[in-house]
Length: 234
Image (cartoon, rainbow, N blue to C red):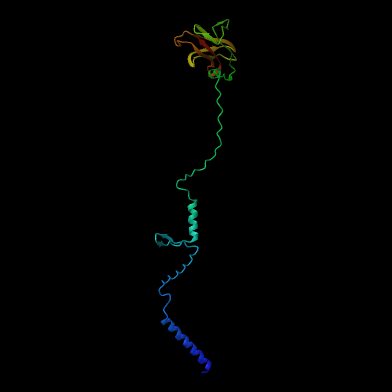
């Protein structure tokens, strides 16, 4: 062993002995000072998908880890749900406004009470239909559409044309819409004048005042040939 290697070994041995002597003999300067608590190792950073630890009091309670996709779907469903007190109002369907029906025209008194004559089927016609107080020389006298209740008798005069053979026509007297008298009259020629008479003091109508109507009807067919109205007043 050469001199250089020996010298290195001696130096290392002396250094080792000096170190051990220093650890045994020289007192520790920091023996009286309290030792610092070891630094707490930093916790591992949680992944983005983890939910942070929830601390209740002094005891940490860990919540199970929920993936982000599940949490996002739950939050979206909760946001879309209506509030407990919210009232859902259904849409109101729009309807077209109803068109008001046209007002009915009131019937004229004459039209409502007086029927329309029908067209002749056999050529028989009624002409010169008149209510009067008398008949002279086969012509009406005192014709009117208004009489007093003191009038004792009234006549319904008609002129019948078109008869080809002997036939019958009927005079029907109405008081306030009620049939009170029927008179059947024979027609013996194609031009024939006839009449029926009404006793206005007849007890079947104690009070003759009111509306009257007389119809002339073809007896065989029931066809209305003509009609006229009049009024009896006090």
